[in-house]
Length: 94
Image (cartoon, rainbow, N blue to C red; front, side):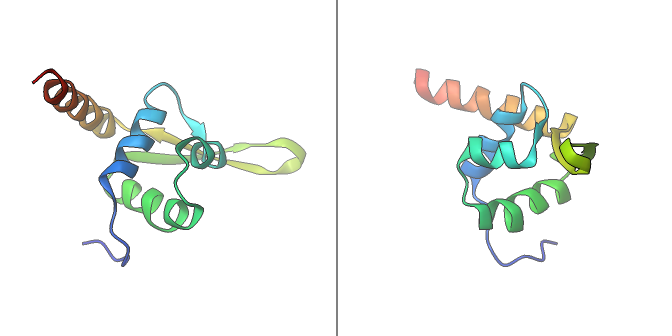
């Protein structure tokens, strides 16, 4: 059961999973690329997608002893985006 009060928007899921389908990305890069508002992105979208097991988060050593949060699509997330792309392409053709 989701605990946050903001709804997860389908367009955010689609944008984020499409962006991650080519490669994992640093969380800040992903937020800028998808142009999802920072509040929604960090407080709703990422936590919800992690809870749904569509993405996973790892940490890497960054510059100047910082830690980079890396977001990666899971197999479950990849299957979802493939299904959404099939639906999308069918809707466009018809």
